[in-house]
Image 1: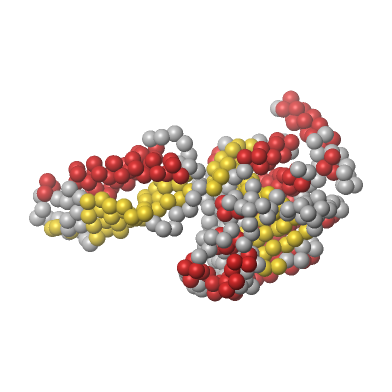
Image 2 (image 1 turned 120 degrees about the horizontal axis):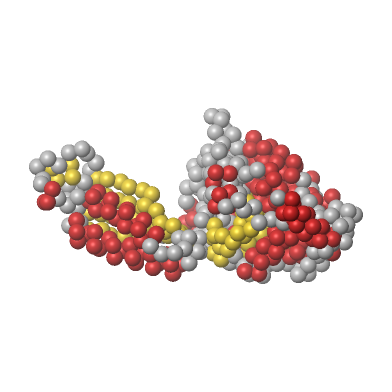
Length: 439
Ligand SMILES: [Zn+2]
């Protein structure tokens, strides 16, 4: 115990004077590591949470609703006070810029989102947003001007389909804009409600090379970091997601008068199929996940053998090839089940799939090295949830930093991350940005 403390302390001393020394040339407290204000981050998390509560007392800062609009106004006010002069682009993304010493350099972008799912939590998205602002304030307080311009981006409607970031990389379609959002408004109406301009949506597009780099700090939303007692997750990529509607057709018949050996029970076949999906996904090494998360049985009565079942199948992985490979295996198993149960099983691939997005390898290493220098334990991991960064990865070297989610809970009012973990993540984001700035 003592020995461990000693090693940790002495390595931190070396870091303080050595690795981060040159970064602090403008800092009056040279020799100490520049640090975020943990209390300020935590109190702002709680303050923003107030805007997410509706009349019924639910957490409801859903994109384009009153809570979202008020939360955004509060956030923009803080950005103004920090000298960021925020603007809203055509997709409703909030953008705050801070000048660098060298205007010919491309900006380093960082941020996240502040909208939430219905009855969501107070850390998903808000941590990365509030930490981005915190970094600007720490730089202000220490009179540090970076070489690169900095850009804080708060994306609009992340939870309703990463709409703001999708638009920023030119991937939003007219049909996408006509889609209903969770708020009840269409995406186009919602974008208007938060100050965007859907009629001129193309004006928000950023091209390849427009950013020097993009970094998003986020809660893990799973329980791996907490379980393994690791402080920082270095995200290798954001998984691709593919959905299939699976229809099992049997024959609906009298449940009393039809003998067991004369049945074409669609639900029995579907049950075998669900188990087969689990077996196939577990049969290969890796972090892939596969789920049957939806089931509808017809006609649905005690006394009728189920004639038809519709299932929702989802597979996620960092590799598109692996998703296809697993699906082919599942198809094979389905054919065998179908023959065995005298049913027909068919698949309809859904149009809303998202491709896997890999984060930048060099950026991962920069984050990992900065984390180690701060004395944090790290783990390279994938993100099983979708994020705005997956779109930005198509136009810029992008990366994500994860911190632990207590009990792995997210998209719930029970979502929680400790003030220490949040400060760790924000400090790492700060050091990563300073490092990227020296490139
Ligand atoms: Zn999020």
